[in-house]
Image (cartoon, rainbow, N blue to C red; front, side, top):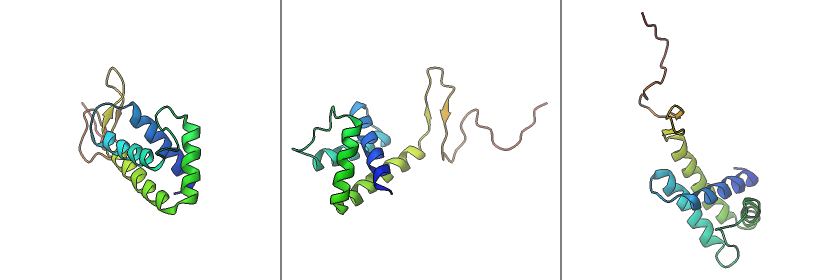
Length: 118
């Protein structure tokens, strides 16, 4: 993964995870990224409250300097993206926007194939 993309995605995931309170697979994957970044920048950068651009720049700089950091962070970001791509969620108050992604099952209202009604 290109370093600038990795840094942007990791920064966004970490800042998103800070705002989450409840558990779940996606929150756990986000928390893993946040924990990794918090430990990596301990004593050098306060992750909570950091501006996204500052966090992204710090990640980019660290990844350029430390290939092991880059490799570990890329693994965590990829795990987060896998969980995100396999999730099913409703995003609106009325429940009409459904993100099916790669769900192998059937979601109510999901159109499969060509169907005719009489």
